[in-house]
Image (cartoon, rainbow, N blue to C red; front, side):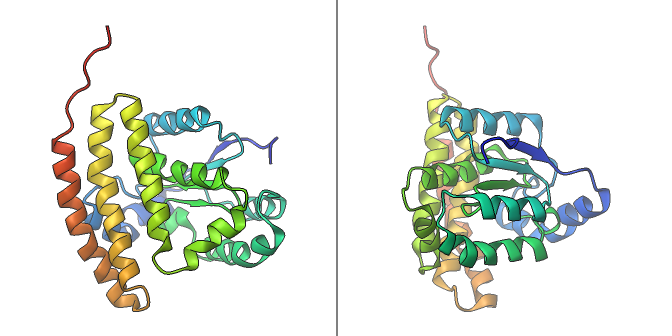
Length: 239
């Protein structure tokens, strides 16, 4: 995996990208109240921010796919990712790969980090989301038992820990950059996103109600996120 390119992008596909942007992603756009959610068109600014984060944290083996569907390459990465034990790769990892193959994010969206292939798949032109997914990669990278660590998300409510760590890291990094606007955007986006996990996990075993739970959970996230964003002041200039 060390000799593979770190960044790749899917070839333009007007039909698939338009369907994903204008149809399948509408619920997520409404819940997070952001048109760029799963818009399948990543800007140079978002790409640069993600690249700088990965370089800053020395995450050189993480593969980033911008709006790309590559099941064969993902299988290759799954098989050859020795950072995760074979037992986990050929069980939970294979299940993840099958889901990725049958329900391509290139069409249905859903920015994510796959620890079993060490891959970030990005479909939204949102820097906070890109940094959040990279935060997952950073979180996994420092663990010696990556497969077991990733599989813990099976446990009810454990995902809330992972999501909190990734979002906190993204906001902390924006603060480190002294980028007040990025901090504000992160609060407004990542807090309601976290709320969807709280609501969804609470009603995890009732599919239809789980969706309602995600919507309900996003509401306080929007409120708190906007309050925190409104309290972010511009950073003083460094003399």
